[in-house]
Amino acid sequence: MKEHLQKQANEIEFWDIEPEDVPVLEESDIPGVYFNEFREYVDEEGNVLSPSDLDAIRYKDDYEDDYYR
Image (cartoon, rainbow, N blue to C red; front, side):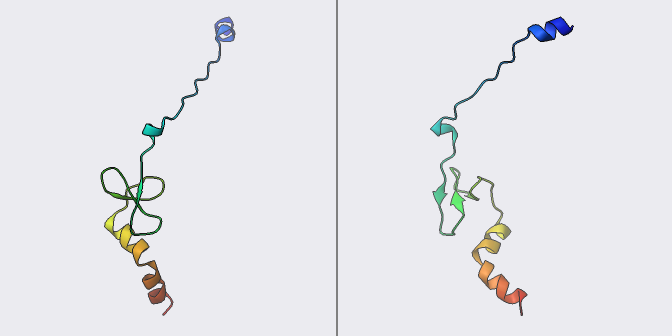
């Protein structure tokens, strides 16, 4: 068994990421939030944002004022 393992070559494959494999994100009206190909709001990493996430980002300055009162 050890001989068999020693004879195996360790092969590492490197895949090239083609530009078409990377989703194209369009900027939205909210800084740091983008549109994906389905016109959903997403963050920089492509995670879909819920309506409550959008409100928290869009109105974060308003929420901070309420928190410190």
